[in-house]
Length: 332
Image (cartoon, rainbow, N blue to C red; front, side, top):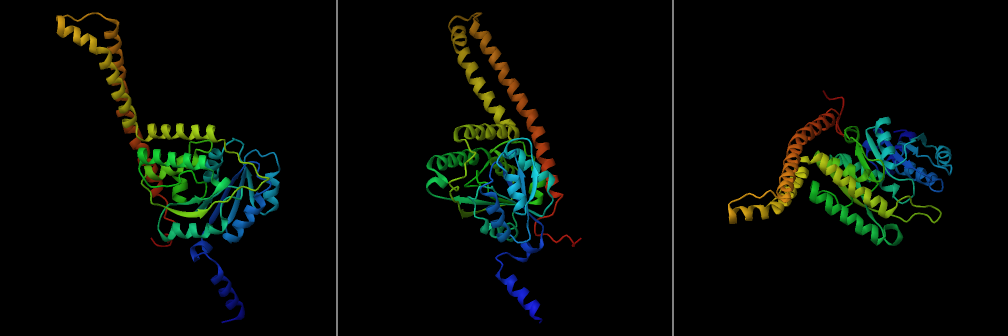
């Protein structure tokens, strides 16, 4: 063995990633809005954590020179004019071709050195998404945010099924077949919830790995608006539940309207049994109208459920069109 080969083998032995990480196409996706103070350090960290990966920074109308800093640090810089993280992630998944996608933020809060572990877990466990579960203290993961995260995890688990403990984490690794079958509809920070629900809806294999979550540097400002974004996340969960489980959604409305209708009809029924007459009361007309609305809701649920099942099948077929991350494409 030549000295060059020996040195190469020794260097490869020092790398924390498997041969898959070094030989496959990996894209690191960093959506950014006004992260000029941290983006260069984030790029450098991912370059050391995932040697050979292509690092993409999508600038989302920054005004502080984020794009210029990212370009100087060696990243591939592109722009997305529609404001919001969800819009950026949708554009990234559409534009970029890779075997594996590593999604993170440009604020220096996620541990880039763990990216290799996440990618290895994606392949080694034969899953389509690995989430870096945030473990942070103090200002890194404030009690209010921790409570909100737990609440949303509970809601998603009860509406769509259990599977995640940190649905709002922005540090994820997904397979190509996950990214290309993901029908992103969110525009803002709801995108993390939508990614999680997509996996639950198609019953995709996923995994979670606890990772350190750091505080933002003092000269870096969070773009998250706790109450506004929390409300948008909650509304998005309800929207997805209506789209993915329409029979249950409209069925619940049907039951509520029927209960209300019977409540208004009760005096009319009591009068009939007492006198044998059906009085022409406004409440009787109102009860009949509410009952009609209930049956209309039930009909909508039945029809939209069939449409939802077809959409789910289309997404599943698109998912099956693409190989698994560790699949050998040379095998017929």
